[in-house]
Length: 101
Length: 101
DNA sequence: TATCTAATTAGGAAACTGTCTAAATATAGC
DNA sequence: GCTATATTTAGACAGTTTCCTAATTAGATA
Image 1 (tube, rainbow over the protein chains, first blue to last red):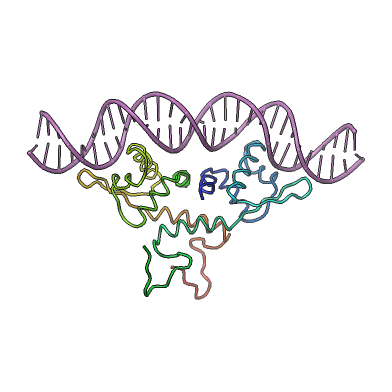
Image 2: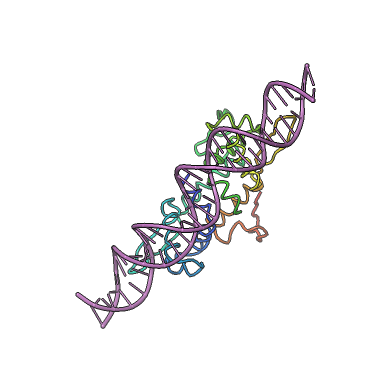
């Protein structure tokens, strides 16, 4: 989760995820949405890849990026546990006889 | 949201939130959980306060901190919108019989 | 092979972050 | 006022991050 939260700390990277939320996009298409050089964008893709927040596949000269929803669900779980302590735990024993240290 | 994600990027600050998730705590009690000087801890409290992720109140010499769940719900919403685009939007017309608590 | 386009890697400057020590502020109690 | 405790503020410094330009890699096409 460390790499995930570090990746989400940058507004450009969150915007990249927002764009990828609706559809798969190429590196070039994504770059067009930002006033930043392509190498800088490439750096952000790399950070998102290292955090496993995005997936990619090459198709000819282009690279298509998409969101990896699995990791986002981990973020969701973390925030939910904070909001509802002792709830939302995977494999939790249901109420009667429930013991959570 | 910028300050919020920046605040969540640090593992010490996430751990502080985890500790505060179960109960209100004083600055000193929180500091005992970390191998770090009190001024360093105070800096982290300050970052969390600026992001409005925690609330505080003075009681005598001590300052009690607690989680502000409102902001955490914003984080939750952001992540959910990414997972389910066009769903979970506030003010959305509910499906017939749909109950969202 | 040579050339063009798409994208990344390399290297460096400027700004930001996390941590420390020392000093300051705030409150309680004598 | 003086002292002790709890906490924050100030200033410095190493490490990290973000952005740039220049160079490189990868694939398509003639």
